[in-house]
Image 1 (spheres, helix red, strand yellow):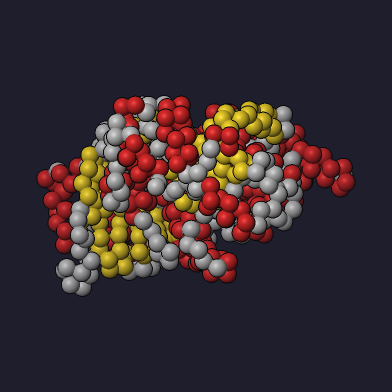
Image 2 (image 1 turned 90 degrees about the horizontal axis):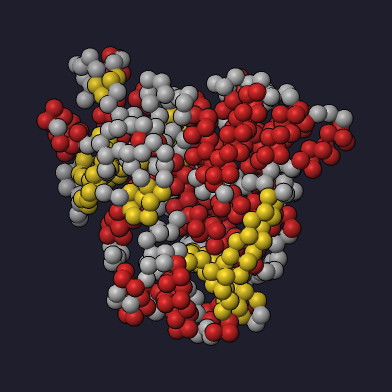
Length: 574
């Protein structure tokens, strides 16, 4: 019996009686564990795990640990039922499992009672059911469980420290900007590019550890040893590491930006000291958010306003699109890469969970990162950040291009299976030569950019391909846009329409537009080809954060999580 089925049977009044994490642990999870064959003596609660990286220390507590033969083999991190389980929660539970004993616990669980994500710490496979005692005993017999080295454990501690201290990370990124500009004497409009180079170095070093290629050299200790051994300064050491990173990740920058411009040794030392305790590889969206807020938000507001699409909306759109193995996915206005990152994680998890042979899993992964993720972005700095972000979250950066999407020749027509995007809103596009290329621009002096993006996206899709796009809601209900809606119905089927609350984008760039998420499927040669079985319609009141406020603040309620359950045919109660 799954946890969801157990609750449905024994707690018909779940929403009334289970309000807190403590309620969930004591009233629900412990009885459920007994039903799976575990006894009271095998359970341990609120165990303290000290996490120290350099001079930074934090103590964390695992909610429930299950011991088998004296060793913890299952770690459960419980959240209150109104908290939607996210990637950060999953990483946090896995980190607990890795740090709890040697070898690590075999399973990590993140659950709010409604959703239950169970991760095999050694294979990365995800399940929706907590294993029974007999299942764990079988898995222990057949799983090769190597102890983690101290180098690997340090990276786990860094990842956990990063997840648990987003505010501290924000302060560190802000301080690094100050150091680069005041001590490194780099202009404020150039400091972002230098910061991305340092981030690339740090991520390359973390990846070296992940693939057993060597130690993490982004440490003050290493810089001290390198400078003494080679009789050079800290800037020269950073330059050497940057050249190593460029060899692994070529074509991130154009030729003018390929060299590290910071020459001040004290500047480099201070930045390494500040960033050393944190992990940037695979720890969620905190780095992207911090870099956007601190470096980009005030400097990239030119003619084409850039807005950072909130994670909650991105997650919903990717889940609804449900890209499969081999699907070629594009974001033609990719910004800092949020949609592509989530698509990568979504499809990569399908590979991990697919029970492929090691050879086939590697082939599927190579196809994903080399052929399936495409992006285009007008702004040079944002397109660099998109590449950096994809590297940070796994890979798949090599088909990110810079330039005007409407005139781009690098994006093949009738090629993409899925397009997910949040284009610039209600901006007049007034280039006659380009307008003449579009049915919706032909014979006009100007047309709104988002309207042209929709036509471009439909042209780029294969027949039967899906577009999910964020648009001003007025395009769907204002009389003056009747011609646009007629174009949509002629060329596509509607699959989704979600009204978003007013002010949904104010915390992410200041847009006051009333927006919606629109899903379209490109028609085939015959009108009924690829016609969807149903259209999903919804009005979101709550989206997981406070809308209409300048600063991003998380809220527990999120209608998009409910919509995800319904749209995927999953039972949900609230």
